[in-house]
Length: 437
Image 1 (cartoon, rainbow, N blue to C red):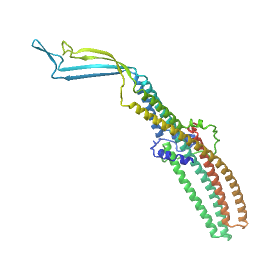
Image 2 (tube, helix red, strand yellow; image 1 turned 90 degrees about the horizontal axis):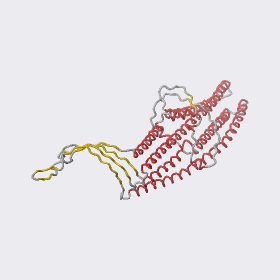
Image 3 (cartoon, rainbow, N blue to C red; image 1 turned 60 degrees about the vertical axis):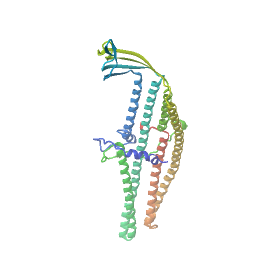
Image 4 (cartoon, one colour; image 1 turned 135 degrees about the vertical axis):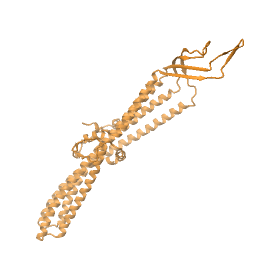
C-alpha cells in the first residue's frame, strides 16, 4: 500500500477544514521538510480541537476533586399557611404555628468517607486526559506524514519537469539541424514536422506536470493556512533514507500513536469498571446548618437563631441492577478494544512487511533503471553518429532520444516510489518525524 492510498481519507478531511490565513508572511520562504511539517502543525484547526478536548478533560479532573471539598449553600423561604393548628385552653385559642413562616439558613456538608468512589472518579478523569493527549499525537502523526508525502510529490514533479526540459532542449537542437537539412535538400518536411510534434508532446507533458504541482502547492497552502496567492518554494531532493532497524514488532506496537490510544482507552475503561463497582458502596458525610426562623413557642412570631449538627449515612439497598448492567457494558467495551488492538497489531505487521518489500523491490528496479539510462545514452550516441552518416532516418534518432527520456523518467519515478515506501515504513513503525531535528 503506497503512502498516497494510506492517507487519502484523512487528507480529504484535512483539506476540507477551513485554515486561518497568516498575515504579513514572506513571499520567498524556502521550505525544507521539517519546516513544512512545523508550519503544518502551527495554527492547525485539527490540533486546536484536540487541545480543546484536553482542556475539557483536565477540567473534569478538577470537577472530580470537588468531591473532597465541603458544599455550602444558603437558602431562604417564606410560606403563608392557613388554616394552622390551634389549641383551646380555658376558652382561649392558642396557635401552634404562625400563618407567616420565615426561614433563612446556611448549610454546609462535608464528605467523610465514600469507600474510594471520589478517588476513583478523579483517576478516571485523569485517564481521560491521557487519552485526549494521545489523540493529539495521532493528529500530529497523520498531518506530518501527509505533509511529507505532499512535499516529496512536489520534488518529484520538479525532477520530472527537469527531464522534460532536457528532452525539449535536445529536440530544439534536432529541429535546428532538420530545418538546415531541409534547406539543403537532405531532409523532408515530414522530418521537421515529426520533431515539432515531439516538441508539442513534451510541452503538453510539462503543462500537465505544472498543473499537478500547482494543485499540490495549493494543498500545502491549505495545510499551512497561507494566503492562496503566496508562493510555495519547496527545497530538497529525492535522496533515499537510511534503512529502519526493525528487530521486534512488539516494541513497534508501543511506538504507534494509534495503538497507544487504544491501550490508554483500555486503561480508561478499566478505571470506569472499577468506579462502577463502587456504585453500591455507602457514603458517610457530616453536615451543619445555622440560620433564623420563626415558629418557636412561646412567641411563634418571633424570629430566632437556630442551628443543627448531624451525620448522614447513605446505604444503597436496591437500584434495579443498574450497577451490574453498567459493569457489563464497560466490560463489553473493553473486549471490543482488545479485539481492535489485535486487529491493529496484524495491520501494523502487514504494513511493515509490505513497506519493506516495496523498498527492496524498488531498489532492484532502481539498479535496472540506472543500467537502462546507460544503455539509452550509448544508443543515442550511436544513433547520432549513424544519423550524421545517413545510415538511419530521423525517426530512428527520435526513437533513441525518446528511449533515453523514458529511462530517465523511470529512474526518477522509481526513486520517488522508494522514498514513499521508506516513509510508509517510518509511519508503520511509529517514527515521530515531526519531532526530528
